[in-house]
Image (cartoon, rainbow, N blue to C red):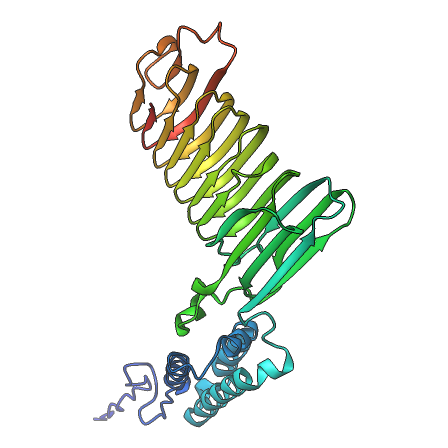
Length: 375
């Protein structure tokens, strides 16, 4: 009789829970712990005012280096704890060193707060087309000080600016003046890096004076921060405001002209004085709007896409026509308006004397949400 002995089976499967052979070395990357320590150190230096806005501007300009360092860690740092530590320490050291020496090499241009005065002479001017614009795509101009008439002065325009970045100022000496004041350049805003600083955008502002007596066409674009625009003493021929955020208060002068407002966010207040012939076009108003019309005012007011509430004060006894379409949030009209046509979401109302009056106000309101009150 022959006996065959059963050979023991060998299990070659790894017994480790993560699939590794028993006894295999496991590497832990030290890159991210060191990177967090470095980030905390930079934040602390910013809070202690050791790092200035110029130093942080260098970090904002050279941030793609962070992606390069992360790629190096993924490529070679995960294979060795020592290599990951060297990459992390080296990256933090290089970043902090560049932040300190970068401003001396021009890597922080436009990061420091600047105060300058720009003027344009009044002599020889017969009219002026003035454009005030902030840089696109960032926190640029905070018009906290507003625009006020400049009377009895030798300057057609005098602008006292506190700003970050650069200013492009152009004007000609023709009788019909063309004046442009525009904020440009890199380093205008640092975004979340402003958290490290105590002197953020609160110290910026434009204070612009415009001489009265000349026909003025004024355009304001890309402004952030509240704006107090007092044009009541000017000879205005046209006004355009586009992409202004943070709240706007506008006081217009008497006269015959047009005004256009587009993409205004924050509360918008518009004061139109007595005896004014005006055409107003306003679109994309958010944050609430108050419009006051003085006695004897006439003209057309077209308002499209107003949200947050729209209140319009008209003078007593005015010949008024109101056309409303797609109004939500409530509709309140003053007494004396008779419905001419319309349904639940809108319609046309007018006073009895509208057709025969020589001075009339025509309100056309499309897509109003948050409540409409004509009073």
